[in-house]
Image (cartoon, rainbow, N blue to C red; front, top):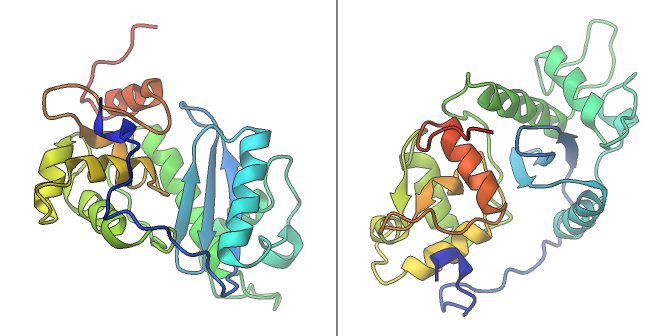
Length: 238
């Protein structure tokens, strides 16, 4: 059984309390070669990426984030003046407008309200994710909000983000060793399965030490596609 399929709770894995402080945030859904992705950002940075963001999954993710972040997502009209709501996102056009504004805090020459930081972070995340799938971005340089993970999980994910670059892979055991927990290979699998920032914090690069691809919360075909994009696996023939 792969590490990510491990269901027994490891003592390192503690339930995380829901946040009580309200935080501004915005979200958008974008089409990608692995299906629609939901991206959500707070004033601190990108906070969550959700695979397979069809209508039901998106609604559930937005409701869950609303509880965790203690506030409804920012409305389009309040995020960027003059923006128009999209069909699949509360703030998609807000993010694009924020990107064109080239600043998360400055007003335009007409004296309009400042663009919220969360909309600016979301716009930059959309830009870099689209560039990644186009084959242009090899390293994400995004501000990240790590508040949806904690403890051992956060330590492992930060190690992964900092030291396992594009086009490389790491074993569950090796990653456990790197964070000073040599007996925690299965717990690393649990951390990968609960990663709130897949693709950007690249849990698809974590594989079995024996050569197997391992598990993946977004599905094995998604993992294969991402590894093929990075040149680790051959591109599928069809």
